[in-house]
Length: 256
Image (cartoon, helix red, strand yellow):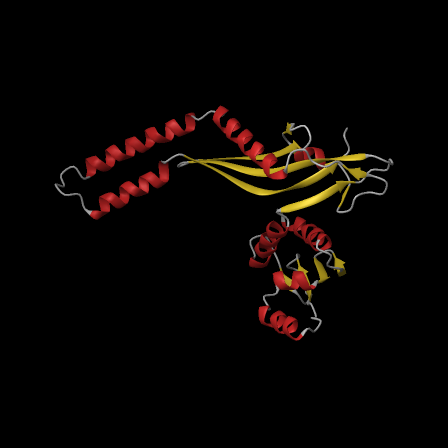
C-alpha cells in the first residue's frame, strides 16, 4: 500500500464500521468513532468497564489521522508500517473474518442462492518461500465449487439486508459440510502441484549436513553447538505446506 492510498483505505474502513467522517481533505481525515470502534482502537478498557458497570452512555473519541506528513494539522500521523496502521489492519482482519451479504437486484421475486466463500493463503516453505492465494466458492445447493470467487462478487452490488421482493433459498449443504468439501478440494489441488521444490530443498539440506558433519568429524563427542546447528538446518530446509484461512462469508446470489 502506497502512502497516497492510506487515506482512501481509512475512509473505507471507518465508513464500513459506521464511523461518521467529520472532516476530510487531501492529507487528513477526522472521524467520530462508535463505541465499538473506540474499544478496538483507543485502549481505554477501564473507561468502558466503568461506563458499562454504572449503566451510563459512553462518549467515543473523535480521531484525526494525518496521511501527509507535510501538513501542520493537529492529529496522529499515520504511514505504512506505523503501529496505528497495523492496529487498524489487525482490526480489519478481526472484524471482517466472516460476513453475510445479499446481492442487490432490481428484479422482483428473484431467488437468491447461498454460496459459501473461503479465502485461503497457501504457503510452501523451506529455505525459500512461495505463496498462493485461493478464493473459493461452493454453491450450497448443488455443491459446485468455483475458483477465483472474489472476481465474481467484486463486480456486484451488496448489502447486509435482503433486497425487497426477493427471497433466499435454504441451503441443502450445511456451511460446515461445505467448508469440509473446500478443505478436501484444497488438499487435492496441493497434491496435484509440482513439489520438486521440496526435493530440491532436501538435497540442499543433505549437502549442508555433510558439511556440518565434516566440520565436526574430529570430535569424538559432538558438542552442543553441533546439535544446535543441526536443528537450525532442519528449521531452515525442512519443507512445509501451511494453509491458513484469511476470511470468508455467506453470499446470496441470483442464479445466473
